[in-house]
Image (cartoon, rainbow, N blue to C red; front, side, top):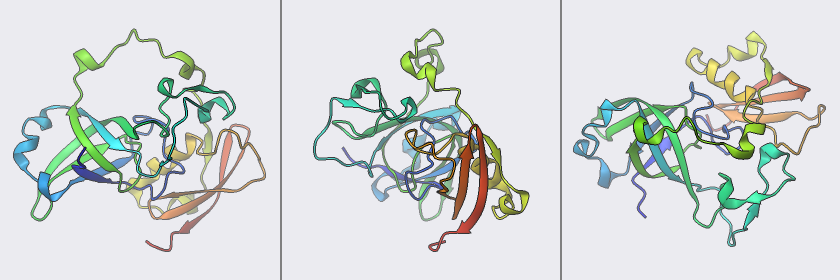
Length: 226
């Protein structure tokens, strides 16, 4: 398959990325097409849709061999499920699928059509294989059973982010960083209240601790490459 585009986001690495698309609607991303696909006519009509599907590559999750079972992090990292019953990045084919909101399409003089989206769960630079419109009358199934994921979908932390530290972020990124932290970025199998974690997001490294259902931000450090 050919890479048609790459997405720019505020996540320089995998840690802290929401486990599914749509969980943090305030996360924005910019899709920039590869030179071969910078054709405005290829997007004709897409602006009429509110949401789109992205098919993309788990470019940072490479393994020589695949496993028939994996340990979903939200099940504590101990319970095994079949790989095809999960959305684990470690699959026979490293393909990801995300539904995101289409915020707009603009024409850039050098880059051609640029697509702005929100609610994504992709790392900065992730290769995009395809874009398709989300069609509500076929893609939405309100009666669908969700399986074991019903056990974990409501997990959310209370975030204590001191104002002085939060204000280090530009105003347009403050809501997003708080919502990212509320999703509990920690590995599910690590629950040490004394440990200080760090989430790189939007040019800063956010240091935090978690005790019970409360996350406390301890510091915000500017990343050296920003």
